[in-house]
Each structure stands twice: as C-alpha cells, then as structure tokens.
Image 1 (cartoon, rainbow, N blue to C red):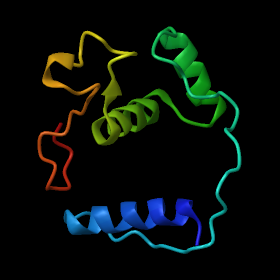
Image 2 (image 1 turned 180 degrees about the vertical axis):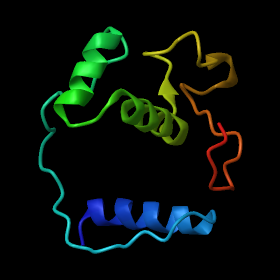
Image 3 (image 1 turned 90 degrees about the vertical axis):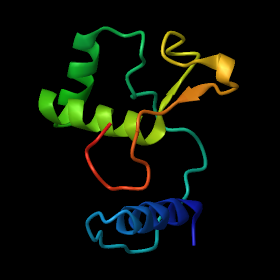
Image 4 (image 1 turned 90 degrees about the horizontal axis):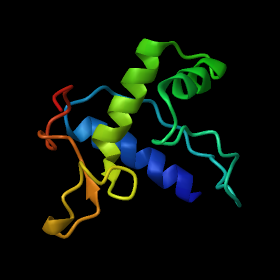
Length: 108
C-alpha cells in the first residue's frame, strides 16, 4: 500500500469515528515522487485570483468557500502566512479552528 492509501483510510476512519458519513474506500493509490504544479492559491493573493483558480477547476464561489473553510478547519493555518491569527506565544506555529474536535459537525 502507498502512504496516500494510509492518509485516505485515516480520513475514512476519522469521519466514521466522529459519527460522520460512511465513505467508500478502495486502495491502490500511487504516491507522488515530486511536488505537483503550484496551483494552490497563496494567502497573499487577492480574492479574484482565488476565485479564478477555483473556477478553472470547475468550482463556484460557494463551493470554494466550503472547501477552503473545511480545509482550514481540519488543517489550520501557519503563522508564516497568518501571523495575526496564530499566537506563537503558546509555543505553536499553527492555529486550527475546530472547537469540537471529537464530533463530526459543521461547528468551527
């Protein structure tokens, strides 16, 4: 199995353990051997750049907001990109926004 399979099964089991939906799983992913193209919008880019980037991938603005909000809720933000949000005095360089980490819900 690939490391990508481990990440995927972790997401499937994580969602299930929090009462989330049953997500079908199939193994067989292939790990990347190098970084892909730099297509992820950067925090310093303007809003129109973000909208255009997501539109090129077939997403509308509502879907873009949902994906970005969920991604940052699950993964957080880094102090290098968001120094006014991350409190480095707490000894961390990432802030997450999930206030209910043991429950699968839309609460931030």
